[in-house]
Amino acid sequence: MNETDFESLKLGCQGSMVLIAQKMLNSIGYQLEENGDFDIKMEQAVRDFQIDSNSLAVNGVIDSETMIAIDTAISLQKAS
Image (cartoon, rainbow, N blue to C red):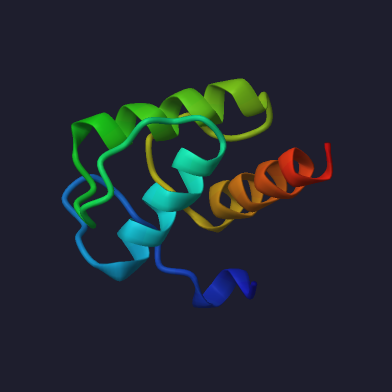
């Protein structure tokens, strides 16, 4: 993923990229409604993920670094 091509996802965003992020977060144990709306529950889930990662800024925004970390977490889960 090219970091410069990734548009951050945050509270209030809607659409297919949000839906993909919801599905990704759900695949690693979060319980989000998969509706394509970045709501307050999704923001909290992103914050929780960022806290658990110990290496990301905790801001509730899915930027390129957070998306890469989510993708890595999915890969690690599949490998185990």
